[in-house]
Image (cartoon, rainbow, N blue to C red; front, side, top):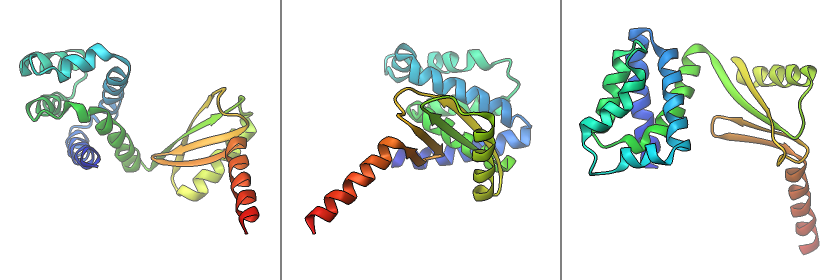
Length: 182
């Protein structure tokens, strides 16, 4: 809970600074790269969380890949995270920043997972329906995943719309169990 509150505060402050600087999209990409490195590279995480590694070394590790990115606010932000020992909140900050930046641009990013590739017409229909609901431009990120057994699974921020066969069977099973208990 505290991490989410911190992430929102840090992301909002960073967004304000990058909007003034005109580097919002660049910083969005940089944060995604850091989030992916954090989640996918255990050594990277370990170094940033290791108390024996100096703050200066941690700052250098975080800043070096982004020195040419053109965002002074972002580099200062990375230093601030290290100074305040908040580097563990980095993945959450990246996610919240994405959501806030999309909202500023009037966009909603929706992840769609299906058990087989969706036809262009299906994607267009999904996008159209979500745009009616969101009343914003909808960007679909459609991927095929074998563990989604029939139907689609949609993620809108932290909200999940589960239209999979597995979910429908679970709901049906719960209704049957409820009717038997009566």
